[in-house]
Length: 469
Image: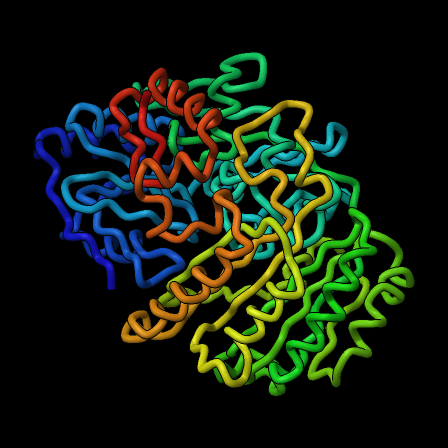
């Protein structure tokens, strides 16, 4: 496991003052609650900061940032902990935000305002009461603000409405100088542009307001086929893509599922191809669209149905339990017959592939268009993205590394320098040249100039980092 050795804060007196200033717990490695607070979704990467500030209010975040500034400590931020980029060594501070899960829906304005600890499974029941839907991700347990700062793509609304970042109206942000800023397109426009797409490089977002959509129901779910039928079903799926409009989103994943009791019996320990579909039109129209897929090969399980929007998680059925996960991702500039043949070869029944899931998501539609208020999302215009992950126990990570690298190398033949920020692994884009390629030179230079203004000391660097110009 990749556990960074914990450091020690440089001033015991300063730590005492921090505890006095913070309403929530302040933890160090000696505290009983420290390990639980540091543990996120990926058990392979459990951070070991010198200090953890468990924020319960914006003032706690301010106190934490000012303490870090006085002691020359970098700062990382966590809510649900689905994405982690670890530091190498030294003293650093972690701010956890899960104790700030506020959700306020303004149905008349079709907006939602959330605190930094809100997850999508907090938001969905509240918006559902008003017949509204956010542009959420495939896993409802993911944190809202981190997902949105990384752009935010989902399994249902994204091709119709674009990235989640495209619909943000305003943010409250604590910057590296400890100031609390109200950030809008008209006030602090450079910071507004940079935050939305570049994750946590510029400060701690402690409140966010974003637009939502009048969507009550959808047609969707999944089709599971035997893994041995992957090559044939993929051909049918690729043909289906050519006729889809922006109301339909789909993806595929070859999965080697664990024998867990919460899975349907037919899927326990099974090798399968999972085809996911989300459609915003009438159910009868959705049934017509998927008819060729249903006829492509014998089905193991079919969960396609009309559903309330709150059940959007039923499209991907992403795992909810913490696990030891290694991963890689590649943005794809095209999806040819050769791409799918390589995909089937690398993941098929004779491949010896140990990976838990290898997926391809179709993007496009509104994800290609610039929003009315531009942001720094780097992946606009990429038609597909592929993501692969191996999961298991702590001893399984080593045997996943080779297959993940081999998969990424093979897909690079159709790859793009850009990718989806939220899908990047902890090891990806660790060098400045890699981050520059990810964003493109012109966008990176603009981000670096914003960084120089708001975080000249690079306090927020425990991420896919943009360095100050």
